[in-house]
Length: 358
Image 1 (cartoon, helix red, strand yellow):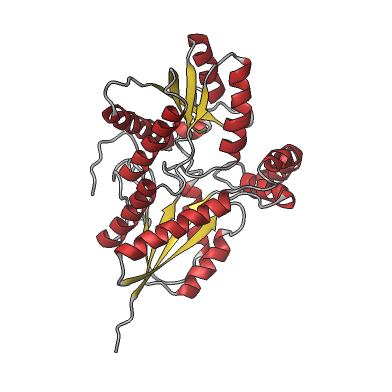
Image 2 (image 1 turned 45 degrees about the horizontal axis):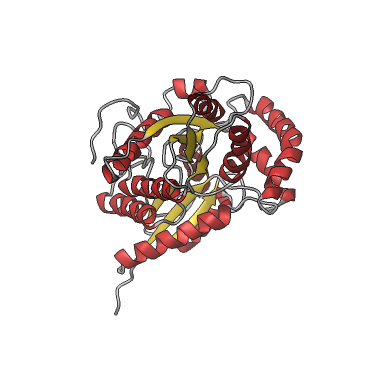
């Protein structure tokens, strides 16, 4: 009798995006109803979320129309999940591995995915966020939604952050280098553009900004190693600011303006995004490109997101494998394939302490 193969569910988390014009307003409602995004009590947060969704729906629909009416994030996440599943199946032929997608604010929502995973009846589960840098507003929120939704069995492991994953870093180096070469190797300032974060969240101990800084420094090191004769001028900046709160900076528009004053072009790398969506295809490719042109920036280049590049998928597969082979969980069900004392996902785990790889 052939022994039953172990079943492993790999749950891939992402933000999600509206799949059509009719989904834009409820997507925004879901987004701003999240306590990790707006920390007010529910009786304030819910009507405020409804107001924001209603007031922003028209402009958001117009922006999504540029991308064909909806966000491409689901099909791109599906392609990444498929590539990850294929890579894991090749390296673990003795295990039945299935990847599931759980989107935070639009379909497939976490509750539906949790039911599908429970029906699969896995022996082990690996929670795999597609947010490279940990934040309470992204990975933390997704994990919370999962814990509130999943009612099945299986030993659970979670990859809380992977900002220093070698495959992810190598994929960024490849995208930056190929974009720069395709543009004729111009004189540019490399701007690592990450999604912004309100200053009060960063000040509360959220490790996101620190991990962004570590991530970008590691990419810069590998770029220098690729050709030591090339001296990269680089800076970190933050995009997608909304609302009246003070956000971490400098902002990407301010960084572009500074490059214009210094007489250099810009090459933007979407360091916090693994797929193309509204922040890259509209904000970077249209809004900031128009800004750069208006300020007289001669060269404006944008490196693609890492998508399904082999180094990225291999790096992610390696993180899943490490989570499985090391076993065990932290106090709240979290294991770290990266730096144990720096992920921020469990008690006592916050920057900038000196960590070591487990």
